[in-house]
Length: 414
Image (cartoon, rainbow, N blue to C red; front, side, top):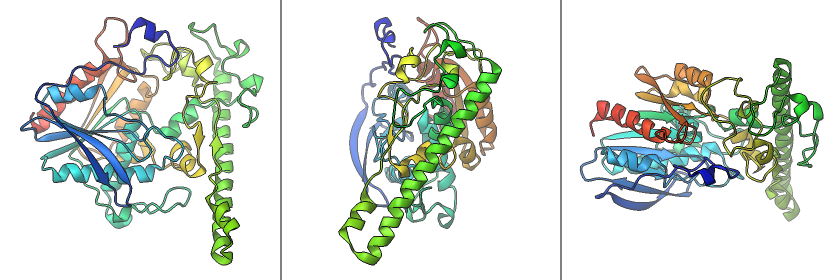
């Protein structure tokens, strides 16, 4: 678990120390080719005789050392951790391409001879795997052929094995839905990270913000106005992204007719969006809104009034294609509630009671939307990344691992 000194830093609470990998674990690294010719990488850790493999994947993060890896191995399950072609890179993350990456991993594991394939989606990995289950469960001809921007990404040509089980731990509702909750609507000028509309500033005492570390209290009127303004800012960025995509498409069409290198260059120019201030969910500092056991602060640390202005944040630099595929609640296909009916394999949903990304009402709605006839909703004490609720308490990750291990063993043995 993290130390008191680490907890005091900006961005603290995100990394949880994990147990040792069990003795006898066989670890191999693999390069895989996707259906569209990209290369992705994964690590397989297994034990002799393991029949069930659990896949951990996130659209944006490297999960090679995820805290659940040793926990699952200790319970007799093989573990596959895999990146996408956009690991640690928000800039060009196309969720439809990430499904091709996930498919390559599932094909590899099937070909390794495992009897049971289980996906485990934590945080953003939850929506990624819900999206994968949804598309994998369709007849190939019914799958998506392009990303929301119109960029060709053909899932109809991919071998997409349907996993035998789905586990979700603290899944948030999708990158787009999450960003709409986190984005600061008080940005007055998209080119100026310090510009502020005072009446919408979430970190202003005039609007209900208290001293950092002290619970704030926002009025129902401010909350309603703030959330409406968040949706309006997302819509404005949507319009700008669509305009930039259209400019590239027009240049591409011109080049087909003219063969002019200037048109070709114009079609390739990335036209990157810069999205400032995306750490501003009112619930981070006002625990009375959608209450649970979460500590004060955001996913990035204990001072969202500061991290909101920093470099680290969701969707900070992003191409228009990636914005439309991943970060816009209005255009993304990767939305948990929309994908959940397509998750029909036996499903376990583990809610962490101190989560600051998946709140109790979210968890209830997500479980209700899942299409599986065999589904369970369990709650354990912990924070979003698997930390303890309070000093000296068991980590949320260890409590979740016990639930996950027991649930898998009931269905597949160990």
